[in-house]
Length: 422
Image 1 (tube, rainbow, N blue to C red):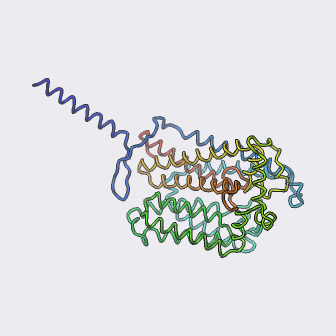
Image 2 (image 1 turned 120 degrees about the vertical axis):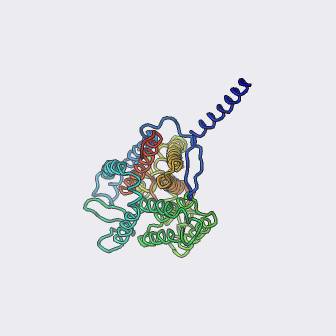
Image 3 (image 1 turned 60 degrees about the vertical axis):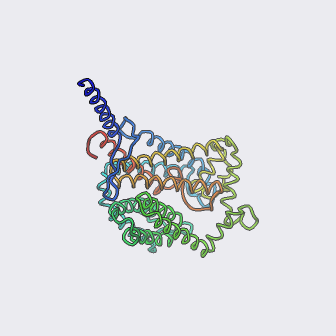
């Protein structure tokens, strides 16, 4: 009898130990006041930071610096850029990368709870800057668009700050409204109004591309935050209809759509389809392995904005299909890793941090997708740069600050998993 009791105790004790061991691999997640258990696949190595993510960003920055130099080296031969030296754009690009790295290091030191508290104020500052850029003699006009504010030798683009501001504001808003996320007017409508205000200011510049990115960030955070599916698809439908109406009522935007459908036609090849047709020619010349670094012909005053919006076309011409695949794989891996960091933070009951990280993943992934699609002729022409790579100081700085915030989320999560405090 004693032996049977001991065996039974050993069996039940073993079950209890196995159950306890299983529970050790589960982390609680609090959603709408209820606590759920979610299994995490977090590796045992939680010390330090995500070095692979850093190296992916470094690879994109370094490759982008080389390609900006290659794409812009011949620009001084154009009368429009005759006063610039051959190294002008690459030096400015390298300077912005250096300033962005310093800014990112400072942003990494900021705790996520501070970002959460300051998100509404950052949103207000962004609105002020977006209004200021529309004021004559304050905003700088380039190619018919008023998108920059000059600070001495530096031109700053407030729409890039708006992406970070709306990202932080939407994440903080969803955490505050978690209990009423099933009610449209209390949960979603105020956020929709905020996005509409930012969007109207961006369209006045005009900058429809930045508005599209901001709308996707806000919609993505609403979806990831657990907004009712019917409300989500209702808002998504309204946005799609609104963008379609904006395109249809704008003759030059409508012309871009027609040019995208047939860029090589007689009517479009020298008009709205000029950039797209020459981007396709450049990628076609590259074939599998490309014509070699520096060997692009399209960058010799045939392809406009080769060092900014159409940098990928130069990459395709000089490095071929292999180069394009390398860039695409880097962006896919980068987005996947950022989304994983966000899921990990949410599993540790850090909903704001998790939504911010996943919002950064949506932002960088969507913008890279649009730029790649435009260069390959899969999407209509839209003025969005390739993150980390295209020439543009404000965009590079915004990208680096966003990555620094993701790294902060990851560092605080690792500190929690080590038993410390974030």
